[in-house]
Length: 226
Ligand code: SAH
Image (cartoon, rainbow, N blue to C red; front, side, top):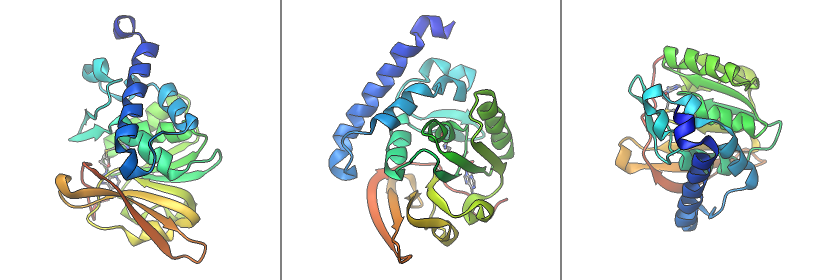
C-alpha cells in the first residue's frame, strides 16, 4: 500500500536529490562535491524499504538514519553514498565490511559489482541481513556473525575495507588486510560528537596516508565481543 501512496521511483529521486545537495554542501571538506554515476545508480537501484522495519517503511527514502532494532540503525543514505564513493569500488573488487546491520551498505557495494565479506556482531541482525540479501538476489555477499575488529583474514587482502561503526582507534588488523593501493574508511572517536570519518590508504611500500574526511555520528564498534 505504501508503494501506491508514495510511488517508489518518485521517492528514490527525492532521496537522490537530498544526497546530491549534501554532497555539494560538504564538498569542500570531502573533496567530492559530486558522486559518480555508478554510486548514484546503486543508491537508486537498491530498494531501501526492503532494509527497514515495516513501521519505518514510509520513511525509507528519506535521507536520514532509521532504527532497525537491537539499538542499531540503518545509516543515512548520504553517508552510505559518501563512503562508497571514497572507497573507490571497481566491479569485481573484494570488499570487507564491519557492521552489516540490516545489510543496506552491503547491498550498495554488491550493486557496484563488488564481492562483499561482511561481519555483524549482533547475531540476529547478521542472520536477518544474510537472508534479506539472498532474497533480494545479492549473491556476492557473504555475512557472518562475530566481532569484526580482527577483520576476516581468510579472504584478505581486500580492495577496500569499510567500517560502519565508530572505533576508539583504528584496529591494526584491518590495515594489515588492505591491499597496497586500497583504502579503509572508518569513523574514529569515542563519543558521537567527536567522531571523524577517516580514509586510510595503503601505499605500494605498505605505509599509510590518513585523511580526516568529515565529522560523523555512528553507533560505537563494540570491542572484544564475539
Ligand atoms: N552498515 C549498516 C549500518 C550498521 S550500524 C547500514 O548499511 O545501514 C553499525 C553496526 O555495526 C550495528 O549493526 C552493530 O551491531 C555493528 N557492530 C558494532 N560493533 C561491531 C563489531 N565489533 N563487529 C561487527 N559488527 C559490529
